[in-house]
Image (cartoon, rainbow, N blue to C red; front, side, top):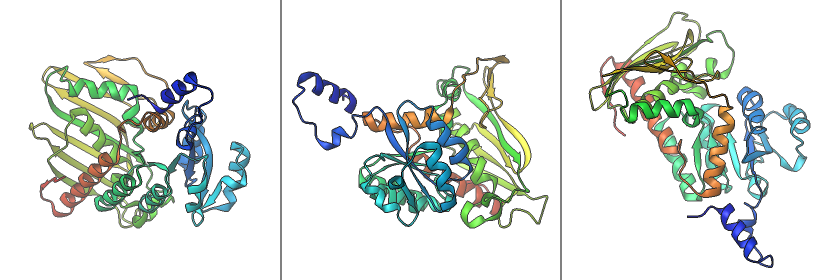
Length: 360
């Protein structure tokens, strides 16, 4: 099937007198408009600057619950008042033809509300990871997007990174034989932070598992091309007065249907960012793997070239092309929903001390 852009181009070549329907005129522009919803650190210092590096999209609106942030964003990104929304007025974005995509970057427990509202406004949606704080809420988000006929992407930037894609290929094609053991971890020392991720369990849904542990889950899933079938887990806490209602460190062990295993760790008092895969005929891995530094792949001890690019820009460009060409989203809602099922199983295994079968 030809893309909308190709279709429009062919129409224009065929007859300059043809009047295009509004739905096609909307995609005549080279770039799709993005509304940033939630103007915290990630949106302000990472996503919005990345939009300036994209090919297929650009920032056209903002949605915020903090009016004091508006003047800086207006000046920096040349936004006018008619493209500034509060959380209360957000539904009016349905009338804003400059917005094709809403990027939801709120605390985890608010993803559900704003993804559904964006979908009902007729906008495609990028939802930052983790998708939500429960698998049931994820299913409702997927259903809302399907009902509205809009696309949904989860903000798994690593899925679009060339080094991670090469990493996936090695394991899924068994270039070094069958995978036997995966060892992976992502941790940083954040226990003293005052951010909501470290102080409000109702908003975050948990500690490092919900914040950075999801990267390790992703790494295991795309290293193997399989979903884990069983998990055991343990949680630990050194500083009892920190991280109220959430874990400080968590380790878990996956079993896959071919009897390969994965040992994983995520912590707010550790310092680690790597994944290593052992196989029948060698090993390969990335260090750093998941953080903002470019991932570095090593295969059987030989370091591979580093691909310098902006991961966030690449992710958003890919989604814009999914919309323009009406193609399947790689990091879609089902992927986010499965990760949440896995997270719930990990927490259950840690609480009970027993192995948990993972049912999707």
